[in-house]
Structure formats: C-alpha cells, structure tokens
Image (tube, rainbow, N blue to C red):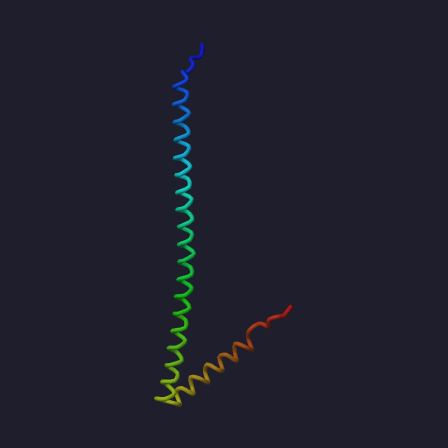
Length: 103
C-alpha cells in the first residue's frame, strides 16, 4: 500500500516548490544580467582601446612631422637626404608590389 500525504502537507509542498521556483528564476535573471554586464564592459573596453590606438598613431605621426620640420630647420641637407630616401623607398614599393585588379 502506498502512503498518501495529508492535504496540509501537500499544500505546504506546493508552496515550497513555488517559492523555490521563484527564487531560482530570480537567480537566473541575476546571472543573465551579470553576463550582459560582462559583455557590455568588453565592448566598452574595445572602444577605449580603439580610441587609444588612434590617439597613439596620431601622436606618432605628429612627432614624426615635428621632427622632420625641426631637422629641416636645423640641418637642411640631412632633411633633404632623408626625404629622398623615403621617396625612393615608396617608389620601389610601388613598382615591386603586386598589381591590384579591380573587379
């Protein structure tokens, strides 16, 4: 013979399972929110990284420009030689690089 539970015990069990279900649903919602927060911070980090790299490359370009102007003012023959070497290297790269076909 299978023992049966009283009505009060059954009601208490139902209340307990409903209570656990609500708490579990809240826990899952909190974990989902934490997951969203983690990936949002990752996207924010990527934007900050891109801005930092842009500022760094701009700073390097400005430093090279200021160095070239300073070199041209202090010692013009060296500046001219440097400019010619850079120009020849660009021409060499243009001639030796593979052609891009436009489709």
